[in-house]
Length: 82
Image (tube, rainbow, N blue to C red; front, side):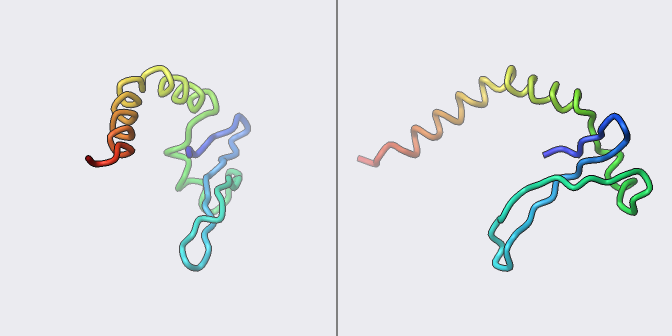
């Protein structure tokens, strides 16, 4: 998940919620406005919505080799030992 910077300057920061025993309950975004105490902390690593879309597009287009390696590994794991 990325920190997303909207056109109006609002940041959408990913946040996870977990139970007391550490199990993941859910993921969401919280919105920070300029002037919020944590705003500057997240601004430097934020991406615009267009930049996020471009990263996703590039990942989908360029991950063929990684996907092949993963599928080969998965098939190897699923094959029972003789």
